[in-house]
Image (tube, rainbow, N blue to C red; front, side, top):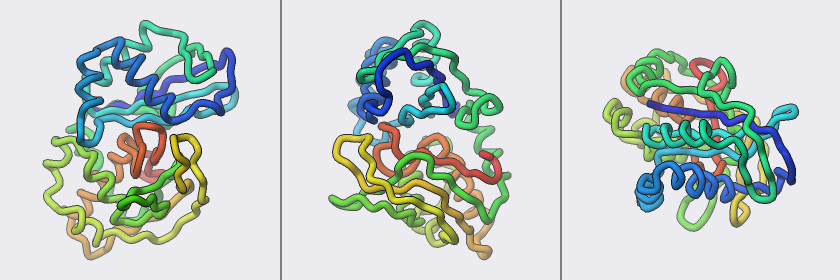
Amino acid sequence: MLTSQVIILKLQEGNPMNILGNHIHGFFFKEILRLSSPSLAADIHNQNTSKPFSLSFINKEKQIYWIRITSWLEDISKAVFIYFTIHHTYGLADCAFELISTTTNKSEFDWADRIPVNEFIKKSKLFGKEDFWLEHFSPTSFKRGDSHLPLPLPELIINSIYKQLPPEILNEIHLSPQTLTNCLHLKEYHLQSIYNRKNHGSITSFIGKTRWQIDKKSTLMEKEAIWLLFNFAFFSGIGVKTTQGMGMCRIVSGMQS
């Protein structure tokens, strides 16, 4: 299953502006995973490969706050469900929150979803858009060597999503990242440069929207692979520190609208 669980909270005390990505990351590992399954927390923490989850920053909408936890490993999803069923108050940095509700129903909250992988693959292949917009909701940047690049380049985005893919989706893609990069063109963008201070060491990043065009000469296999990648980015995020709130994105026309 691919799961995006939104946790809706009421602030009791403190200043949410003081909550950084490492606070969310620590809450996820030290509270949610270790209390539910210490062995799972240790296994994931010690992985040298990409982690099978992403986290959001704390976000405010009207008078409520929310965070999002996504995963494509069912053991993580179960641990999250169990934790928020049992626990209803939480501490993050100097803040205290009370649980209002949680949801994986995208009709209730735009950033929520829960879908079997095989159904996700089928839906993504039917996406059918050669021209689409991507919303970069949280600060986004890419690592190249010792530098961070706040640039929405096709190569950086494709490679970033590709390395996050679970085996079931990767097995559906029989093309290299370079082949897919050659099929994709950045056509338009409305971006804001932002110096992200939500993580240790400020990172030059961007937020906003980008419009993408799949080359009309691309084969159906190439198009389907790109649709799979960009729809999966809803769960994985793109770029650096997606497990600390960065890189949150979604298609804003088509399947994820």
